[in-house]
Length: 410
Image (cartoon, rainbow, N blue to C red):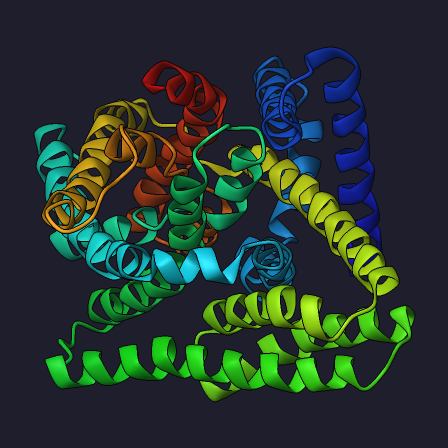
């Protein structure tokens, strides 16, 4: 199936599922869409077991024609990150910069090792063979919270402003750090070579710090371009160009595209919005990126739900996933709670901050995309099944109950 027909089918499904959710299910749109996609996927599996194997084969063929990793990481992600960063107040972010920075680095690394070690113990107990380095790889891809899922849920959760900034800021930056950790561990797992601390440090500087600097340069360039014109069509086009071209250039330069685009979005959404745009441009720019965000989110969660058809449906894998879900939450609690406990000696935090950030740390499409990027093999099957189970639990269970938790803590 060519790219036009694939896009047409995905957008049609996203529109249909959004309509069904709006009319009948009435859940937050992304969660409702994913649940409907899951129900359709399970129905197709049952139909396949009943003898209608042709339908399931067509569905599998369609899904295998889509490179989920490339679609999200090299396609949708830059648009979604820019749209999310556009509405984050940079002054609020500066006030929470140390908390966000520590959670996005120390938190991700700590969580990676806790999850990897506990997953290795559980899998061995269930006689599922997965080398420790691959357990760490699973820890690396599941540890970062997903900004797409988190920002979507935060729109409906009534959290305190300072806490919202911490959660949103961490989710926007920790996926970039998580990808760096994933790349390092994947290199060890697939080649068997152990890089030196110097090599790891250099990669971190190149990807994370390089992405930060490149994002500042892009943001400055766009700011002056927007300041020189007063035409909303052209200004929207400039932001679209910098998201697509900037992300592609960051990839070529081997710096973190996600971090670069987040920084650019923050720059445009704050300095650009207040100093370089007319009111008319601001309205059109916000409407455009809100529309892009809504459409791509809908398509992404349709894909997440449908990709379940490609899982290896082994009972022992799902038993392992059920055992590992609480361990992932435990790792999140420790990786968030430890730095906040240490920092609470010198600064005040919102009551219940650790519980809310633990339960509100949703996993989503980025974890799935990283799992799908692994080479084919038994290790990939195990990791992919575990990842999907945790992502579905995270989005459906945690996403639907975070608002209630916030209200109870108040």
